[in-house]
Amino acid sequence: MVDLRIFIDANNVTVHPQTESVDGWQLLLKHTAPNALHNSRARYDAPKCDEDTRVEVSGEIVTFIENWDDPQCLLCMTGAAGSGKSALQQTTAERCGEKNTLGASFFFSATDPSRNTVDPVVPTIAYQLGSDNTGVRRFIKAAVEKDSLIFSKSLQHQITTLIVKPFEHLGGEGLDLSTLPYAILIDGLDECRGEDSQAELLTAIKECLLVDHLPFRILIASRPEWAIRTALAPGGYLHELAYHIQLSDKYDASGGYVSISPEEVSRPHFPDRQSPVVHPA
Image 1 (cartoon, rainbow, N blue to C red):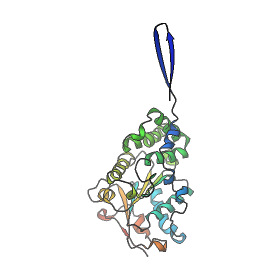
Image 2 (cartoon, helix red, strand yellow):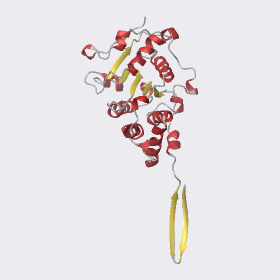
Image 3 (cartoon, rainbow, N blue to C red):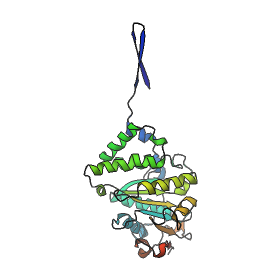
Image 4 (cartoon, rainbow, N blue to C red):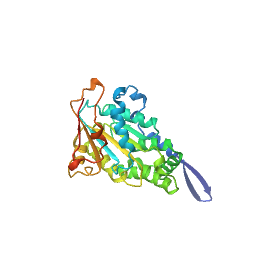
């Protein structure tokens, strides 16, 4: 709110506008989607992998996330509805949380208007990264206070300003970035409204986060819709960058498990860049 203080000096009237200071962190919170967190109340009964196969399946994915020797830091998991993607993502998020490697999670939902667009994705991820480290939070807060319209900018600009630069600043101060929680999980990309928006998010991740000096390991799950399908296809902009797991569409969701051989998941590169097809037991 603007406070107009009027000072009358002889025949002159001087108006001094004063604006209230902006708390960058509080403004960030207003643009987040709490329901999108893996442990939100809205997802209290989220599907998870059966306990008997958690180590076999989710463990292999977590191993990939923690494999610092693999230059690929993006894992894309695709499969039809009911193939177990969200269950794997939920279990992976919980296991990474237990190991203190979960940096952020975002679960899209087509039926929840608070998390069915790309608008809250970057603020929600930035909030989680900042919550884990006061240094990251300090730089995010300052960035929002410097540009309170940041949330109306392109996704690439948002990621650069709210995620990349804060981490770069901390690295410049001598902090070993690999000691911070670094796994970023995004589930249900296909439930994000608008294929162009889905493609914009994938492109922004590719341009901003898949770089050597940042510690992030990113896992994206989606139905094989146009945006991610074309990005992962031969000649696509993620084809050479992403580790791709395809879940079989024959998966029986009622069974509560998926069987993945360690050879299919752990191998860092595939012959002729072919993605493995994961079949149920």
